[in-house]
Image (cartoon, rainbow over the protein chains, first blue to last red):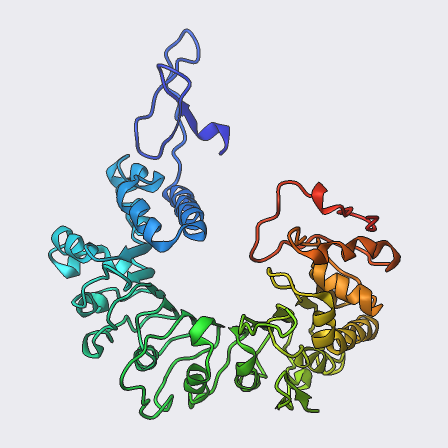
Length: 303
Length: 180
C-alpha cells in the first residue's frame, strides 16, 4: 500500500488503513495547521477486501477437507470478519465479500433462518458461490425450498461423503436458475438425481462430477438429456464413478449439443470409447483435453 | 487398428482422432503403466492424428506415464507396454519435428518408466524430475541412465505427490544431464 495512505497511531507506530475512520491531524510546524489527509476511495477498499476474501478462500479451500473447512468457517474469525467491524460503511462493503461464498451444513440453515427471518432482507442475493454439505450430518432437505432466494448464485457445489441414505427426490431439485457452474463431489446421490439436477439448470456451462454414484432401486432415466437446456460451453470434469457411460450418455443426449472448451476425464480403461465419443461431441470447441486412466487395478500375473 | 487386451480380446479399435478438433490447444494423457492391464495403445494412436494442418493451435502435449506405487517387475512392464511406449516415443519425435518446436511436449519423469524405456533402448526427452521409488527394486536400473542421452529440460511438479525435501537420495542431477 502506498505510504501516503497510512496513518500512524498517535500512541505508536501501528499503521491503520482508513476510509472514513478517525483522521488524525499532525502539526507540521509551530503554527497549527490542519493537513487534509487523503481518504481511500471505497472502490479501492472494496478491491482490497476482495483480495482478502480470495486469499482466505483459496488458502483454506485448497488444502482442507470440507468438514474441516466448515469448522474453520464456524469458529475462526477471518480477517474479513474483523474488517466488517471497523465501521458501518465497511460493514456494507464487507458483506458483499463475506457472503460471496456460503457453506451450508446441518445446522447452518437454522442459523440463517434465525439471523435473517425475512428472506427478502437476507443477504442471499449476495451469494455467488453456494456450497451445500450433503454427506453425513447434511443440510436438512428443507434447505432446498429456500434456494431460489439465492438468485444471483453462479456456482453451486453439492459436497459430502458418508453412509447416508440418498436424498428423497422430490425435495432436492430446487437449485438457483442462475447457476452457471455445478460441482458434485459426493457418494450420496444417485444417477437419476444427478440427471434431475442437470435438468433444471438452463445456464449451466461448467460441470464437475466426482465421487461415486449412490446405488438406487430405480436407475431408469426418462428421456435422457432430451430437455436439458444448459449451455455446456465451459469446463467439464468427470472423475470416479461419475466418469461412466451413464453420465456420458446423459451429456451426449443434450439436444442443443455440447460446447465444452475443456474436458478432463479420469476413468478406467473400459470407459475409453465413451470418452472418445464425448470428446467428439465437442470437437469444434474443445481446446483442452485431459484423459487419465485410473486404477482399474488388475493384479499382474507376474507381479 | 484393433489392439488385444490382457484377456486376448480386441477391445480398442479406435482412439481420439484429433484431426477433427480445429480449436485444440492442449492434450494431456495420464496413465499409470501397469494399471491398465494390457498396454496403452490409444495414446500413440491419438498422438498420430496430431498434425500441424489440422491442429494449428496446438501448443502443449503432456504425457505422464507414472509407474504404480507398488513394485512391478520391469520385464512385466515392458511386456505389457513396450510396443506402445516405443510408438509413443516415435510420435513425440514426429510431433516435435513437424510442429517445428511450437508444441511444448512434456513427459513427466518417473524412475520406473524411464527404466523400462532404457531397457527398450528408447530415447525420449523428459521434462521434470524423476519421482523415485525408493522402496522399489526398479530404482536400481534407473542408475544406468547416463548412457541414454536423456535431457532434463524443465521441472514439472507432480500433480499428486508433494516433492520430497531432500532430492539428494534420488542420486540424479536435477538440472542438467543425469550422471548417476
